Length: 192
Image (tube, rainbow, N blue to C red):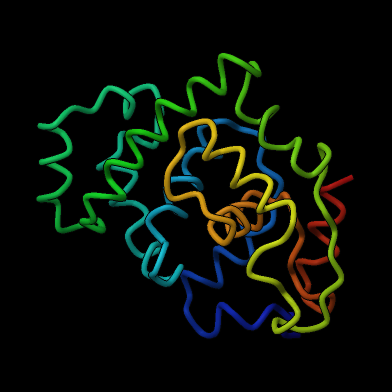
């Protein structure tokens, strides 16, 4: 018996695994939330498939997405990253990652955890949508716009509403699996 799933993974095994195990699962671990923030920053203008293929390389290059370590990166580390052909070499995105690590730590100081801060944009629990097909899923929402505006005020970069909505989907702040996808009910059960 074949599981119905969202159409976006197509036949890509890596995308299928990500869809079937991670996408939409509510995340409350600060390091994991920062990982999605970094990956979504690098996704801007690119496909998620491109980012997933390089995810392990990013993990190695960016010290397992530890914001405390990334916040200390200086010019030499940025130059090293810019010479690393295994990741996306975009200086603006690399610099934004360092800047975002610093801003991330400030949010942690203010709220105790980034988790406590970021989940306020959905009232502390996932938004459960009921999309019948992929065409119904928006690129951004009012919650993503509010998140984007607040992150920018706090010094974050590469956090426009579309990136914020992709982050919300990845971190399980919204369930955007279509209703006939086998993961839809599974994710809803995790959200309770």
